[in-house]
Structures are given as C-alpha cells and as structure tokens.
Image 1 (cartoon, rainbow, N blue to C red):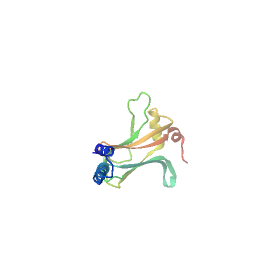
Image 2 (cartoon, rainbow, N blue to C red):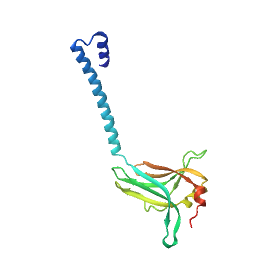
Image 3 (cartoon, rainbow, N blue to C red):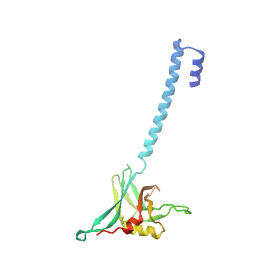
Image 4 (cartoon, one colour):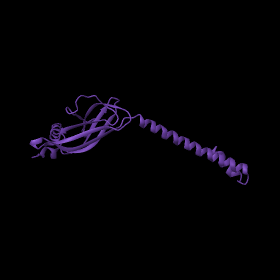
Length: 181
C-alpha cells in the first residue's frame, strides 16, 4: 500500500484529483493502522497492570518507648501495604543479603517473630507492620559474616510466587555501637 503511494508519486503529479485523493487515502490508512496498534498496546498494558499485585514496602529506623522506662532500643520498622486492585496473600518475609564473592545465589535471613501467622491475606489498602531490633539484626548479619555498610532488601513473597522487595542500607557497626539512655 505504502509502496504503491511512492510509485504514484514517482509517476504522476497531484494535478489529477483521483491520484491526489488516492494518495491521501493511503496515508490515512497508514495513520489508522499505527493508531490501532498503539491502542492495542496500551489496552494490553492496562489489562496486565489491573490483574497484578502491587505491594508498597517501607523500611526505616526508629525506637519504641517503654512508658516510665523511657526509650527501649533502636528498631527497624517495616510495613507493607497492598496498593493494587486484587488481594495478596503473603507467605514469607525476610531480608535478602548482598551477594558475596563465590556465592552462587544471595542468602536470605528470615524474620522469625513480629508478624503473627503467615500466610496472611491483605485486601486492597490493608497493611502489615512489624519491627525488629536493629542491634539483633546487626548481630545476626555479623554471625553470617556480613559487616559494615550493607545493601539489604526486605522481601515479601506472595502465594503466586511474586517477590516484592525494598532496598535499603544498613550499617552493622552503627547499630552494634548504638545505645539509648
């Protein structure tokens, strides 16, 4: 079709109204085909997004207060919110550790307490929150041979096999030396 348009341009002039409108029809068909293709791509991406699970994860240090006892210890607060349109059932949470030389895959450190029972279903806008002692995490990491400023990731795995992650930096030295009074 488009090659026919090029041939018409080479052989004839636009002084003939039939040639002119035939050429315009060919160009219009090409624009229509491109617009149709773009619409299909957009609709497929929207359909895929509407059926996928979305989990917003936040990680940050903080502390808890112990009433009359004052501040107890520095903790790492972790929350995950279902921001997608479909419910998510979480079945695992933990930390992904940095890859070391010679490791075939990254090690994981499981979070043993604080979540209650997993699996746990999160409907749209539901969230799950837990905390872990920063010093205890630093000690666990050092026992496994991880020291200094580390790039960690919090992991939440759902029952569909999708892994949701949030990267953050964690310095074992800072949290091992930190004491609150």
